[in-house]
Length: 135
Image (cartoon, rainbow, N blue to C red):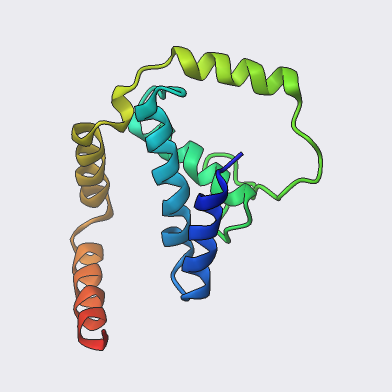
């Protein structure tokens, strides 16, 4: 369950008209903090980000569906199974903490940017320039 302040920050981003990925970033940030605190771990940075995005989808952020399953996570009225929840927590506690380190996050960001290609980076830079001019 996401913390109240995280949900509030995401809602504030939505009110300001920011993109769903920006709203979801709050949940990913919270997840990284949890890993650093030692609440649980993650095998790698990609898994840590996926957990944060999953929480964002459940909290109602309008993100595209999970690319691996192809299904959108709908906010559920049902209470999650306590047994399953405990099992998942136990497994995550055994995972490492380095997935949220600055080095691994930097490595992931660089590889993701490279995978998106030159044109995408160029468009992002142009959008940033427009935003700076507008602001």
